[in-house]
Image (cartoon, rainbow, N blue to C red):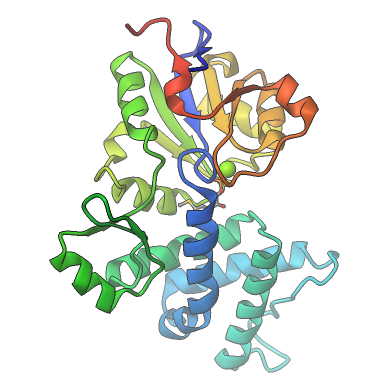
Amino acid sequence: MVVLSVPAEVTVILLDIEGTTTPIAFVKDILFPYVKENVEEYLQAHWEEEECQQDVRLLRKQAEEDSHLDGAVPIPAASGNGADDPQWMIQAVVDNVYWQMSLDRKTTALKQLQGHMWRAAFKAGHMKAEVTVPSPLKLLLIYDLTLWGTLMTSAGAHSSWRFFEDVVPAVRKWREAGMKVYVYSSGSVEAQKLLFGHSTEGDILELVDGHFDTKIGHKVESESYQKIASSIGCSTNNILFLTDVSREASAAEEAGVHVAVVVRPGNAGLTDDEKTHFSLITSFSELYLPSST
Ligand SMILES: CSCCC(=O)C(=O)COP(=O)(O)O
Ligand SMILES: [Mg+2]
C-alpha cells in the first residue's frame, strides 16, 4: 500500500466532499437530478416563505453578475415587466437554476437553494440516497422511494448519505491522534451538515470541528485558504487539504497549504504533470500520521 507521510507541522485536515469523501456519482446521479426534477415544485410550495425569497434574491444578484456570460438566464427585478406574477418569476428562477446546473456552477446562490431543497426532501422522506441492504445485496437507489422504502425497511435496510468506506475510520483515527478535521466544500454548510448528520456510519457531525463553504471564498482562489486558516486560528502550513480537483489543490498550495489529490473511482483524470506534481492518494488510509502509532 502507498503511504503518504503527513508533515509534522500539520494539525488540521481539511476535507473536500464530492470526489473526496463522497463519490461524484452520488452527487451527480442523485443529489443534482433531485434538484432539477423538483425545483419548480419546491418553489411553488415555498414561494411565500422568507427563506425562499432570500434564496431568490441571492439568485437574482448572481444573475446580474452573470449577465455578461454566454447564455446567461436573467431573473427580473421583483416588480415591473410582469414580474409581479409569481408564476412568471418562478419560471425565470427555474430556467436560471437549470442553466447554472448545466454548467455545474458552484455559486453560493445555487448551492444555498440546493441545500434547502435537500433538507426539505430529507425531512419529508422524499429523498433516500443510498439504501444498504444487509450483505451481500447492495442497492443504490435514486429518490422518492416510498414503495422501495417500505420494501427495504422490511428487509432490514436503512437509508443514508454516501461516504467512501475508508473515510470515517480514518477521520476517527486522525482525531484520536489530536488532529482537527474541517470540511470545505462548494456544497452549502447546511448541506454538509445534512450529509455528515446522516452518513452510512450514522451521525458523524461530532467528528468535524467546523465547516466552510463558498461564503468564505471560492475553492479555486488562494485567498480562501488564507481566510480559512485565520478563521481556524492556525497558519496555512498547519493545514493538509484533501481534494479531487487539481485547480483547488493549486490554489491551496499557493496559499502555503499542504495538499494531496484524492484519486477515486469516477473522478476526472489528471494530466501527467499533475500526477507528477501532486501527492496522490486513493484512500484516506494511505495517510500516515507520524504522531499516531
Ligand atoms: C452536501 S455537499 C453537495 C455537493 C455539492 O453541491 C458540490 O458542489 C460538491 O462540491 P465539492 O466542493 O465538495 O467538490
Ligand atoms: Mg470535490
